[in-house]
Length: 209
Length: 212
Image (cartoon, rainbow over all chains, first blue to last red; front, side, top):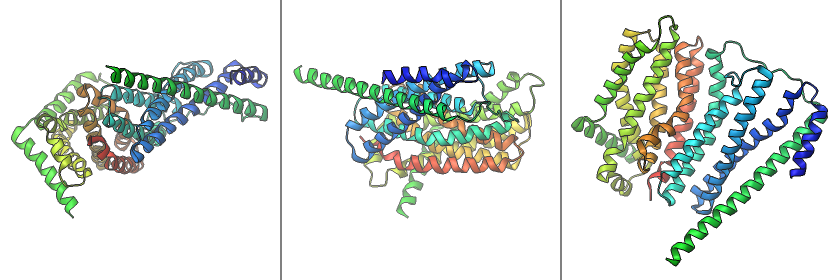
């Protein structure tokens, strides 16, 4: 997997023909897509939790959203760098995707606040799950809202420069996307294993006392 | 029809508690009026007329948050929620009753605040008023659920705004769009969509939030 990332990074410069700033595209967009995927996964697990009532899904949903939030933060950072490189400012409200990620980032930070201020137990699991489901409903609604808001905040719609992707660029993009998804998946498994170990250890300690 | 009767009974209970205790509504009224006065000093001259609409929406959202923060306090203090959950009615009726009661408080506060806004700042047309009404419904529907979630948490006063504000951003977009855009109907439609999506979601998920 590390090889895939390195490969993609080496391949990328070859076909990045409009300056160095374009290269971040290969990192930024896969990270953003992976973040969406993690949020979606978290919501699916949350739905399973509410549906089947199996405690296992709580941890899985939490870890997926944790991953999503980390990748969301990375999206904001790489997005800001890209914005600085190509538009000359660190932040621009006219980039719909960036604004959407900011809203989602705030939303999912509140998810952690909620989670850590509730008592451990089935009620916390269900409240977190309900909030995670709200997040998935919020993504399309916010996107629509941000698109609509352009109307009165920015009369002229910002059109992003950049050509259509050529075949080799798309291949690079696909490789980095696969690599980032794989990275997210591995992190997810590691984090999940760690959290499970933690929970088992805590149970064992309580049993021994 | 028993469902509607349950909802009506629960709403009546909340309104009666408020009528006897007068904990929430006077606070909301005073808050929204003082915010409007603060805004007069906060907007510099020549900031443009549209800035006032933005501030109106800030005032509306925070007034709603004030009402929502109080929404489950009587239940929490006297252990009423356990009784309600045990009562032989659909649990989502509890949410609907609370949402309607909160909406009633918010509308009552706005019945004073909106004329005051027109008097102090800018006129409001029918589209803007429809936007306010639709956004009120959305924020009360979502907020009642979030408030029930936060009521079980340790730092509930701090938590509630954090939970509600990201969810309220689309409502603010819709409300301001309805007030300032030339094509306000589009924003009303969007608010309607938001209300439908999130009301159904809250209605369906309330049961999971309150049961132990």
